[in-house]
Image (cartoon, rainbow, N blue to C red; front, side, top):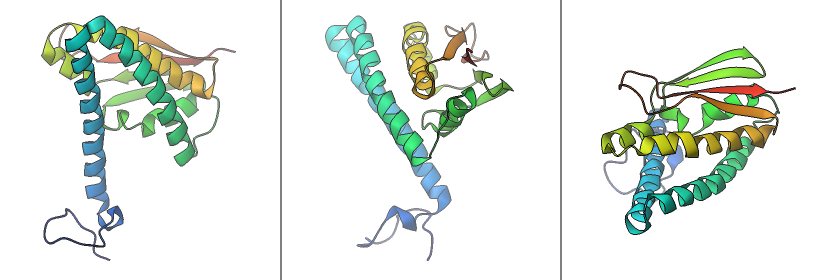
Length: 184
């Protein structure tokens, strides 16, 4: 079967994603990840405009807590990610659609202790372009709660501690840094 690099040409009544090449599927995955990010930004800004940033931030946390549980269950089931150590959380992060297009480094100190450094974050970059200082709230309130949910999903004893978070002094600085540690 010929793998399609796009869907140009005539209508195919038997089209399915299985006909697309791996490279095209990866591009489509990136497009869907950007779409999810855009939806997140659009609804947040709509709530902020109508009821203010405090309400939007509260709603953001509520929505992401629910969405994160859905995502954690779905991804761990589809990819059979099981375990209760820091390495398991890191496996999940590697497969997470939000992280798929983030440049990051994982320093594994041992299977129950690691440092994760993010060098790119599309959400942070958008907030910095906006220039209203919302990155401090997002990165120091919302992200730590979401990261804690990720860790406790696999093991409530895993701590996901923020080492460094925005605001950044300049655009060359890292975006953020986290420590994952299983306390015995």
